[in-house]
Image 1 (cartoon, rainbow, N blue to C red):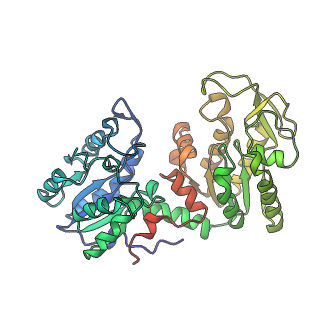
Image 2 (image 1 turned 60 degrees about the vertical axis):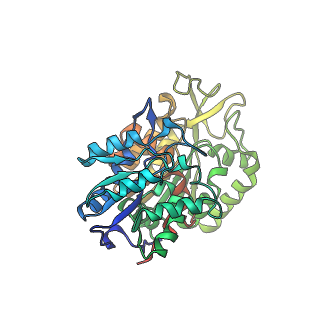
Image 3 (image 1 turned 30 degrees about the horizontal axis):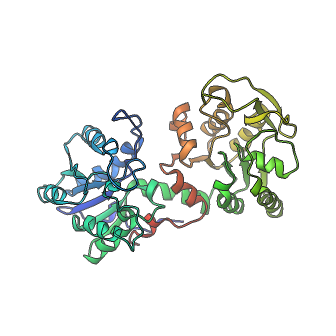
Length: 410
């Protein structure tokens, strides 16, 4: 999926009010930001607009606010950090209405190069409503504040929300432009090229807990890749589908037939489907999750009935690492085991290390795999780490993302 969309480079923004949908959904602890990755990722687009003489109006959601405000999820800490990063004051409009009188006044008072940050879009309580509902009114009010719109929130681009896709309709009505930012452009270039036009061999690595979460991804990637590697909790459903004992391991019994179908499909297409050959087992899941745990390594085809598989074993680590090292393109989504536990992180570390050492284009599909790369210190060795977990998964499924579709074609 090549990106044939207007980007910030196609806009003439001097003196214009430009609304930018960012992804400032950062983790907070006691009001302090604990990971600023998403703020840093937004800077190139914001700086480009400032340098072009735009009046830059930023908006984003934060947290899982459903309908109405929760002061613990205010964007105030983001405004503070952004001011430091940009080296200029970011005027934060704390009004819970998001687009009310305070926002209008702040925008009217802007000079070229000024930056305003609106309050958490979900505080309005209409951000997520279906476009036919009051989300339309909110989207129109957002558009009323601006001349042009830039979507740079890949992490939210799979949602047809007021501030992500509905707003573009009203910007278009007034003759404005709808473009994507540098982060969106980078995400689509990397993920799109990997899936549609990969340099081969193309290896896809899927992990995580449930097969159900990755049904369409497995199906779509089998058609695109040369080798599909399956680790993590979902591997046990594939092992059980082959008739092996998996003990107390995680299993998705409703998906056994699906797993059989996928193994059959791989064979028919001449694709290699790699499953664990050995596994780390323990009496039960670690509690607390990062607490000490005794494990032993057994063949993946002979897991004791009273044990639970919690990570891939050393032979599997080598098998998966070798497949990744010989690739030219690798997409990885989902850890190989309970990576939050030091004893059970070995499989995930081995895969991350193999990817860090290869010359291949390495793309990490957001979510837990991105967290694992960051935590384990491999982030700077990867070609691209996606900022969107759900969005990158839907992209890998071959779905169209509303936030991308809504941008103007070139």
